[in-house]
Length: 344
Image (cartoon, rainbow, N blue to C red; front, side, top):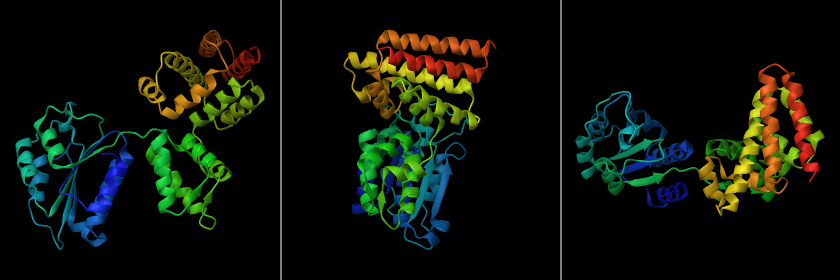
């Protein structure tokens, strides 16, 4: 079950005795955990009836023992088991011995008074393990996989509807571009934007531009876009702004090279019929990065991209061997690369 489905299930059907939350997107795991806890316990009850166990430090049978006891001053208790790496194929470096048969027995007949949340920030579980099979059979399961662009748009639509906000299509696309690397960042920026527009309730491109912070990679994306369009003056303006922010020229050069390698890789994978999602998985990048690269492909043929990568490699060598001033060499490289577009 994905995040939005499980959120709806908790809201409409109430909580169940056992939850298994796993995956790389920590925002989903943390938010579902909070939804479960807040739906069961008041703020006063949390102090007595909400316990967190780190499975890297405490054996699972300690959590099971508490789960089998009656809650204090309330009808329910919530127990969160974090870092449950015994569900994966990862070797536990902490060497905590977990008596899993005790946990398996608990899962056969979990008490109605206890909600047990089992979580691990890992994308795959070891399906061969008995404890994994039992948790999946007995519990509600969240696969906290990172969202693609379409699901991020869907999440934003749900957020704006629930908070009575209006977000233009262009503003939504820019927001995902700037803050869509991970859901924790996107949710934080949406909270900030919603607080800013308390009177109008409308979030525009100008507001997103004004409030959403840009990372170094965001600026390099924009710099590359100006370069591939042959707009050397605008590219240099961004570059000089980055230097004023004390960004290291070698790091900027590295990110430039990475983006042009991605353009070449996306071009080759697209010719082989790969979908955007499959390309993102193959290259281990966010689908939006693939979308940006797809838009930049048309500006260069394979020979031009390889010449650009050669130019960037030469710049890297000259900077690291002291043959030319670092900031000046990157500036020269930007002008040369923009010139490749103008020759097409």
